[in-house]
Image (cartoon, rainbow, N blue to C red; front, side, top):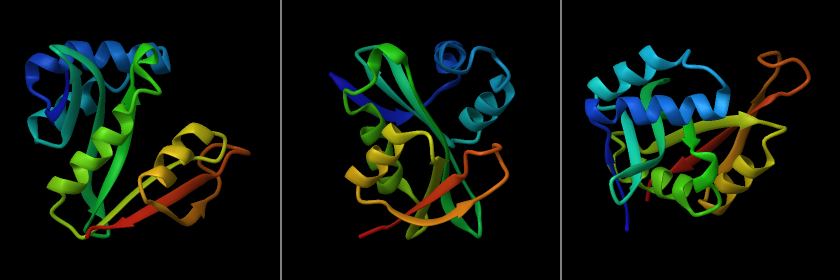
Length: 140
């Protein structure tokens, strides 16, 4: 059974492992650790095993911003990213929720659309030739 909640420091090693599987290194170790300690990291688990995680903050014009969603390669296409998004929407302290993904990341774009997010703009020049699409959702 899958469940979502705040990550705890004892989840750190498994989240770093998932992140490393996806990006090929452990460069976000400190960022993930800080998010856990500051209650800005959600984890989705299948039983006791972490399947993915989400980082968020309220630094984007005082609105909730989902800065990272990572799902273990073996756990993709099972609704884990959607579960994480739904949970952050439930706990968000703001009425507006933003996130973004590269134009090349068609699967994440589909995930945002399926979950009721709409495009809210584009940022050029972060990744050469691959603009960042900003997504937005209003809490109900």
